[in-house]
Length: 310
Image (cartoon, rainbow, N blue to C red; front, side):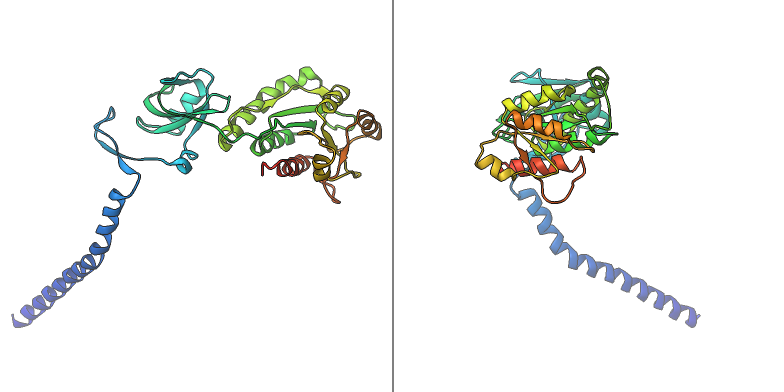
């Protein structure tokens, strides 16, 4: 019996020691946790956006500053009032099903003319999302000059990539062109079937990078029609066999913000000669030969940097 008592006492002492260890751990951590929690509630920008709102219960929300506004979901809508905006179709479905937006959360809607509206969700379903306009502000993400990219038609889905990145960089208009050495051959009617998909790519890219307008993907142009337009816009062509730097063309020859880039096969000597007769200068993108999907990104980056947009 004595042996059993001793064992029980040892077990009790061990249990007491374990409890005391937990108490020590809590005693160490609580003094550090409490100031952090108090600081969160008292810090600038934190408050309860709504209590017992339509969804019921208490739901904390953060007051967003300008940096955080850029993280809000963005949409384009051409039917906007100063009080309410209703998103329907794919936008409503994306907000309610994919993003699972809740009542009280905020989104940004742009009118496509460089004006943004900060809105709060009042009701949401897959058919329609009703938004209450809280603030109206100018979108300052557009370049000072409209920029046009004339792109010779590449093969495969390379044009998808070019459209996406050109929109992210700030292009206003993308015009596909049929040139002599284009591997991909298409008529204007055939290209119209692809244009809807390319315009959707431009729309999604414009949402992602915070654009104030939706860049246009133009229909396919023949070379000579494009050349006449490029000459009127005082643009330049990127030529793999050399030319002047983009900096020189902008500073000394006062070229505009339009650029022509070739496809995989480049340009023929006749095409370059025709452009030269119209007064369109050649620009170089360096000593190395760039792929047709790399060249427009490089050309636009140089152009935007020279215009003070990057």
